[in-house]
View 1: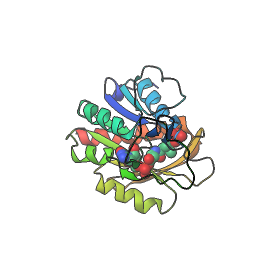
View 2: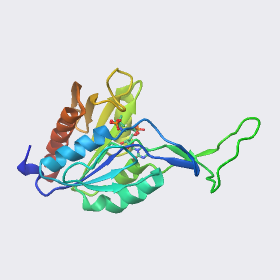
View 3: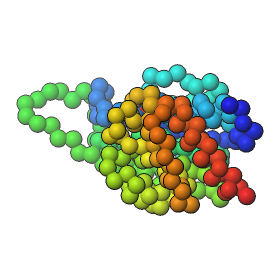
Length: 223
Ligand code: PMT
């Protein structure tokens, strides 16, 4: 696994879900387990990269040789990732970041009352878009897109609007693919128009394919 082209390169990976607090006992989150992002971080470290993993709450152990920074909310992930971004030559954004959070959070537990409870939601900051807008000339940016339909259209749109080099499009409707399990099926959409299918495989194998593609893009960039 050791691979000279990765030696000493600083790579930032994000993984896992975020938690958006409502009150001291309640939060909004999503189904990300962190497995895909942790597999990428572990493989990049095994190849010799200097890996920082910014992770939302998961039950996984820290991959060998990886520097873990734990965060909770989308806002914390935004602050941490934007602060570290310029030190890293490759950023792979696998985290499932909340797009919305409760507009108000409460310091005390909200008591049950009769009738309905409406929670007003506001947008979180789009981290990938911010990274794309401030991308360094020698930096490679890889985003993910979890899609249930029209995958190609949305993936290509994200690649353009967020100024990233590659989108890993993750079908979340095929059985055994996407959130939680140990397997995944993804399609890699690259800026140069190339499209690579990674048929159903383990997340560990998918991580290898994603990193191979990301490094060949990075090598082109550094030429
Ligand atoms: O963790 P697992 O259980 O192994 O599951 C893996 C996975 C399905 C979570 C992963 O493979 C995946 O698809 N991750 C991206 C999930 C996602 O949030 O997709 P999206 O289409 O909503 O976001 C697109 C991209 O924008 C992502 O790179 C995301 O990190 C980024 N984003 C999203 C919202 C936000 N506020 N800021 C962001 O940077």
